[in-house]
Length: 160
Image 1 (spheres, rainbow, N blue to C red):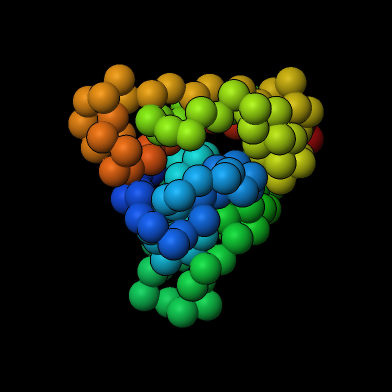
Image 2: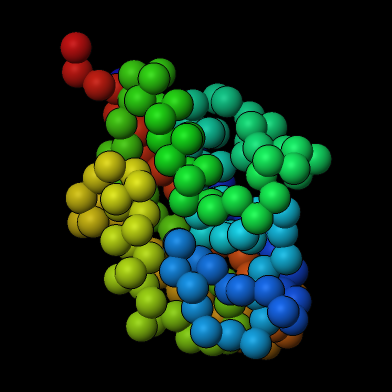
């Protein structure tokens, strides 16, 4: 049996916050505002996994009203979701994600993001696709006011 999930996340960009995507610290004047570390890519991927499991969304599992998740490392949150998938009898088949960010350019960071995500998802890096796009000067992303990410995941039932 297979299950597919789609996730998305958007964060406002603000001064004096780190920009973290896929667990990689990106040099930037602005970072993502959020209760945790604001890693939109990892949040979108966690939501995709939770969607495939029919287990609500990231906010239901790690609410921003709970101080234990303040400034949390999003890769650790993703690891908990992966554990849940394993508990439900599923493993990640592959993921495809797109980050939308006007600047800085992300090309030099994509491989490190893929490595971090593959390790956390317990899959080969060849099963993790990460792409980066700009907003072409349009909308909040294009005006450098936000970072957004979308992800889709394929889960496969463990063979018994």
